Image (tube, rainbow, N blue to C red; front, top):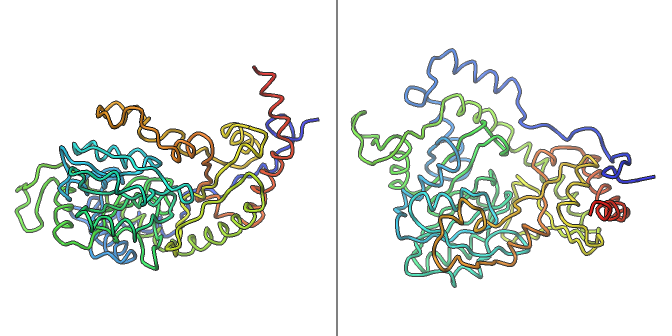
Length: 406
C-alpha cells in the first residue's frame, strides 16, 4: 500500500496554511472613511502623502513617492536617475522579470551577473568584471526579503561612479547592519502587490534621500507636473502613475501589524532552519553576515536530488504539494532565457549566456515557501519537515510511478 500522497497514500496534512491577506476592522474603517469622504484619488486626498511619510520614516528615508506598482516604480526610478538609451545596468538573473524589463523599457540594456549560491542574491565578487564604459547603475535585488551585500555593492558603485537602485519589492522591513533597506543606495523601490508582506492588491513606492531625485520621481509619477508649477503645466514627458487613496488607506492599516507579523515569520524561519539543516539533501541559504533582519517574503532553500535518488526538483515539489505543503519551484528559468527578455537582447554578449549558479537554482535546486506559510504554528512547520522526510524515505514509490509512465 502506498505511503506517499502523490501515489495514493494519506497526506501529512489536509488543512490549509494561514490565508493571505490578513485584514480586520482597521482596513474596513479606513476604507469606509475614504469612501464617505469622496476623496478617492491623491489629487484631492491626503492618504497617499500620509502613507508616503509613514513608510519612508519606517525605512529611514527622507522621501517616499507612491505609484501604481513596483514594476512602474523601477521604471520611474531609472528615468529619474537619467538611465536611457545606450546605457547598461547590472542586474541579477534570479528575480522577477521587472528587474530586467524595466531596464529595457527605458531603452537601456540589462547586464546579468550570476548569483551567490549561499544567498541567491547577486554575487558582488562578479560585478566588477561586468562593468564597461556604458555601465550606469546596479540594481541589487533583496531576494525573498534577504538583503544583498550592500557594503560591497556600494563600494563598487562609488569606485566606478555608478548609481544604485535597490529592488526591495520583497523586502519590507529588512535590514542591512541595522539599517532598513530601500534607502541605502540612491533610490529604492517596494511593491504592494497582493502577495507582498504588506499589500493593497497592487501598488508601489519609491524611496530616496535625495531631494532632486524625489522631485523628479514625483513629477514622473504625476504626468510630468511640478509641485511648484501650475496644474496644467507639464515639464517632463510622462504618464499618470498615481495610486488611489483606497490603496493608500489599506496600506496605512497594514503598516500597523507589520512588526507583529515580521516577528512571527522570523521565529518560524529560525525553527525551520534549525530542523532543515538536519536533513541530508536539504540546504538552507546562508545570508551575508551584514544581514541583521530578513523580511522572509519567501523562505528559500535548496533541494539536492542526489539525496532523493535523483528525483527531479519538479517531482519533489509535486510530492510536497500532495502532502499538503504549498512548496513552490520558484523561478524556473533565468531572466535571460525568458522570451520577453531574450527576444529584446540581440547583443553578442547574450548569445550562449550561461550563468551556472542561476541555472542550477532555477532548474535543480531552488524551492520556496511563501510568507503566509511562516505565519502558522510550530506544528505547521513540523509538517513541512515531516513531509520532506516522508518523501525521502519513500522516494522509490515516485520513481517507480514515473518509470511506469514512460
